[in-house]
Length: 108
Image (cartoon, rainbow, N blue to C red; front, top):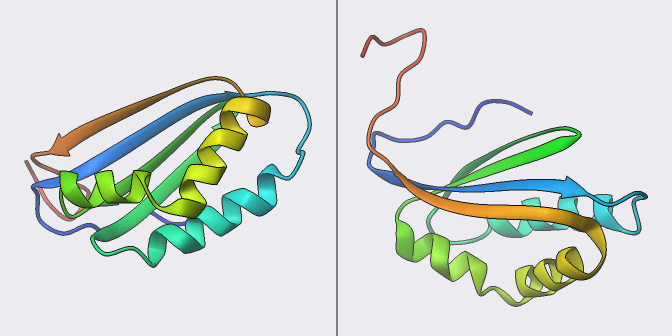
């Protein structure tokens, strides 16, 4: 995994924070499939994820409309329901507009 190569802001970030239940129960396979499926969607810009007890996945989208369309993709709807029923003890989804970004190559 690497840091997502996003364009100049503004763009949309969907921040998914979760606490998992015990056991895999198909989670790893579905997570890999959702990563592939998201990359196929119009407006997808990148994804970053980390898990050490608390999981955080941030997907980046061209705009809020592209992020909203992703939420309604049939395969993603199945994963969302499975997550509520089986994989997540708790979760939050936050949608934000990125207005600036910087890293070691830039100063802000």
